[in-house]
Image: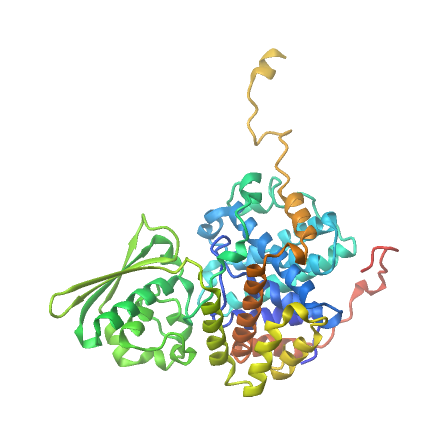
Length: 382
Length: 93
């Protein structure tokens, strides 16, 4: 569908976050890729952008977003801001400013414009507004960079000034924290291999491990205790989900799926009918979630299963540890990719897309890639 | 005067110079080059793009995406009052 650069970023950003299956970085408690890539690809379609230009701009946006995440800390997320939306707007501005080759002063202007556009409430989780936030962040960040390029004014210290971004979003403006050199945040990027909220993944992995290790069947399970950090309460603890979307934000339901042997990587298992599966609903009734105040963040979980024979089985998992084996991660990602796109692409297109991305560093112009995505998208909006 | 100078001024008081986070982060972002990216970071960027394409092509079929696309297509193009504006010379990119 022919559309404006801004509208493409908005729609593709929302599409990319629609399934809650995109990657995450805990430094910003959010999803950098869905705010950065739609804005960059939309710009790449209308101007000559090489693979390397794209990669550099992406890295600039990614690192900026995560550094800002450290500066605002957990306070922002705890207050109820959806950081993918708020930090993502500034991250997208950084990425687009780099792609447009803005100097440092104009880039700072773009940050200011983006800071005052940033918005998004965590209370919208489980509704269509959550993916809308990603699209809005991408489109607004892109617009902020384009406006800065034209000389649009904003305050030059928008992030740290009184009534600025950090002050209003609950963080503390420490230059040391905001600019600390912790290495590349990209090295802590976490991909999702379950089609649900990231806060459920550690519990799913732990439950899955126990089922496989002990050959558990649903009828073996008397009760299940899921211990997670207190932060999970406002994120992924919907007790009795009624829709597929709600199920993605339900620790009880996703753990029940894992114990029932339902493939949590399969998106079809999160549709509204699947949520009513009697075996999963019955298991869900035996799952209790316990919030552990001393347990930080959303990536740690302990699952304790009591079987009907009285045996206690215990497993912990930390889904916040990035993969060490990048080759294995590539294989898992290609498998996930094929699983996701085979319903909408020809097999030859699947291989061609994987090959194009592998050769990204050598591509002199990204518009063929953007064009191919536009032709193949089932919604014709890419 | 002596009492004033002896008093420790709280950081929130007027005159406190806040850390230049905006400028610092903007300068870093604007200066980043492809050659700065280590090989494993480049691979991670490519993996981010591959994963993004997958979740986006699959997500593009979701109802919310159609709603956003339809709302755009169904809206008649409004006439803007700002169209007489011209960019300042030399600023346009």
